[in-house]
Image 1: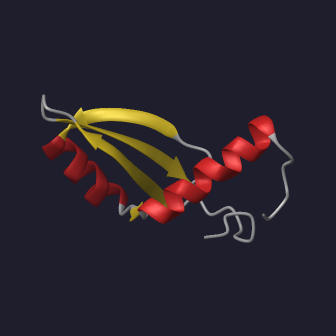
Image 2: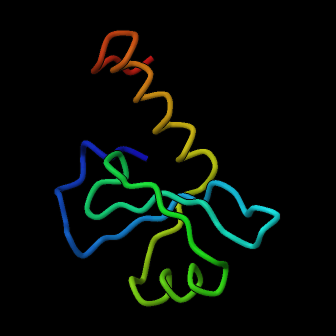
Length: 84
């Protein structure tokens, strides 16, 4: 997944599932237009499912999430813009 090649489109909404907790809450990241810029949200499972349907989200795969993490690490600790 290459987020930089896509034009910013506010109609595209992304969810990155993080965890379903023992108390029934779901932790996830939500973004609009660019999956690399997100907010962390927590809500009960039913509300999470409704939220995803309402916003017609694109669910990021584990590989896509790992790529986002790698890009963030390059910006934080390395050399941004490298493709290694």
